Each structure stands twice: as structure tokens, then as C-alpha cells.
Image (cartoon, rainbow, N blue to C red; front, top):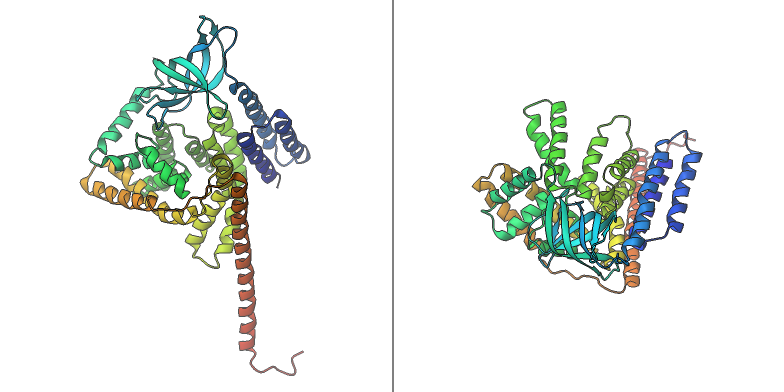
Length: 473
């Protein structure tokens, strides 16, 4: 019980920080509420104390830095024209063709030649087509400007690679080799394969992601636990036919680490890999305790990755799945087969959490996303499996299958659908009505199931006792 409350308070604070950018007057009381849980239940959950301490180390500096980052770092030393720091994540390609890099800046130089120590994360836009890998130490020259959300961004006119990441050239060769293996596919299908299999965004990937957002299935095209489980299940099936199951599990864990290294430290994928390792530990049996442990490890090992919007979506989705999937699945079993009820419960649980965040942040609500998830989830799984096999074994037969799967995927994505885009207040009301309707439907189904069970039981008694025995009391 205390673990569930602690996890719920963490997710609440986590979402509030990203949606509303609160001050310390809101963050600290929630941390104190969790501390009170530890004081009351200390003999049961000692890990919660460490959990709260790590949250304080993570959230409080982030809230303070958010206030600093909204101010343009110009001072009496003059305008800052040069930054030097380390790329936290792989660069992404913007719609305008520039590279967007999250820099951990340690040193800056002003127009008056003064060198300053910043120790801040700054979003930098670089006018280049060359990809920059996480861990690269770079120096950029340009100027700051204020974005629409009030944050300061750095527009770089030029950059210099000071130090490449460890094993960066080897990783780049692997990625280039993968791109070469799929050159026989059409350009459009290459973008889809790279996005689904490796999370790589090319020049036309924004077209795919925009279609996915409009259909409410953007989560299917972002590397997550679903993609990792499909890949590891494929390799486990192959390996188990050659070696024992225990050795197969060890090898698949190693494959998971290699896959994470190749595709980059994406928050949702990193969370899935940590879950995979924590699930092996026998003395952490419950999913809630595993989730607490994963959050703790993620916060300690990769704090920059933890404080991203992708991580917020990932952890709110997994929290909702852990808390509500079992309940919803039992309600749906009366109407659907076990597989479909589990898949529906999984989708509805994740959408109930991530949908509310999308409504507040992006002013969009796509209830038809549940239907498109049914259609696209098998397609994405199949495309992922065949794409991995084709990358490992570039056979023409597999290329034809990949082309056909991509064709059907695009046909589903390009179907016209009405998008709800109204005032935020109306969207909140519609989203609330949508969730309440689902809850009422599930409660009604449970009531109908119980009524039918009672009716069957009474009919069975009536059939067995055709003529009442008067001697029966």
C-alpha cells in the first residue's frame, strides 16, 4: 500500500513539474508527504527513504534551473556568442533541416571575451546535416533567442567537434552499415524502417510522426518496451533452439544492452532495459516495487534522461498500466477473448494517462486512437520483426515483405480522420466525458456479468429440482 501511494505521489509531482512548472512551494510539500509515509511505514519500505532523497536531488535542482533557463543569459559581460559542452542525447533533425542538440554546457564565452561557467542544459540548433552522437564534446558559435514558450535557445551558425564520444566512430559505422543494407527499399519505406527499428529520424520522418500524432498512435512509432520485447522475443526464440533457456536469457540481456547502445539513450527504451534487468532480481517480486527501483536507478544513472518529456510519457504510461490494466482486463473479459481484452486494457490504461498530458500540452485529443492501435500494433510488430531479420540477412524475399507491410501501414496512417481541436477547456471536458464513459461501460459490463452468472446459477437449480419435494425444509 505504501509503495503504491509513494509511486502515485511521484507520478503526480513528475507530471505537475512538466505541465505547470511549479515553484518549490509545491514541490517540497509533496516530498514531505512522501517522507511522512516513510516515517509511518519505515519498518516495511526502507527503500522509500532513498527514493525520496533521490527525488529531492532530481526535482529541486530542476525546478531552480527551469527558472534560470527562462532568462536569457546575457549579463554585464556582454552577449554570449560561444558555448562549449557535451551532447546529452543524439541530435535530432528538425523540420527545417537543422540539427537540434541538448547540450550540457560547462563553459561560455561572451562578446567581450569573458569566459563564464554555466553548468546548464541548453537546447542548441545547429545548421548542419551531420548527426552528432551523445557524448560528443562540441563548441558552437552563434547567439541566443527567446522561443515562444519563453525558454532561451541557442542558434549556432557553426560548430567544432572537440572530442568524439567513446566508441562513437564504431557506432557510426554500424548505423551507416544498416542504412546501406536497406538502400534497395524505396526512400519512403527506408524512413519508416529506420524509425520503427532504430528510432532514427530522417528528412521525411516528420511526415510519419505527424500522421501518427493525428491518429493518436505516436507511441507505436517511438522506441519503447513494446519494441524491445518484440526484438528480444525474436532472439530468444532463435537462441532457445540452439542453447538452454538460461543461457538464452543471459544472451538476450546482453543483446538488449547492445541494442540500447546502437539506437541511443532514448528515455523510454532506457526505462524498458532497466525494467528488464530489475525483473531478473528475485527479491523484487511486485511490479510497483520494480517500478520504484527502475525510477531510482534511472534517476541516479541518467538524471538528464529522466527529466525529459519522453520520460514523462513513458513513466506515466507504465504507471497507469501497472495500476489499472488488470482491473480493466477483468471487466472486458465478459465481451472479448483474453488476448483482445488484455490488449484493450493495455491501450486504454496508457491512453488515459498520456491522453490527459497531450490535451494540456498540445491541445489535441484523438479518441479514435484506440481503434487505430488495434490496426497498427500488429503491423508495427510484424514490420519490426521482418526489418530486423532483413537488416541481419538482406535477402530480396524479406525486402518484398517489408515493402508490403510498409505499404499497408501507410494506407492506415493516411486515412482521413476528424481531429478534435477546440479550446483547452472544452477538450478537458470531452476527455473527461470519454474516460467516464469508458468507466461506466466497464462497470455496466461487470454488473451484467454478475447478473448473468446469478441467472445461470438459478436456472441450473430450477432445472435440477423440477418437482419440489414437500418434505424438503
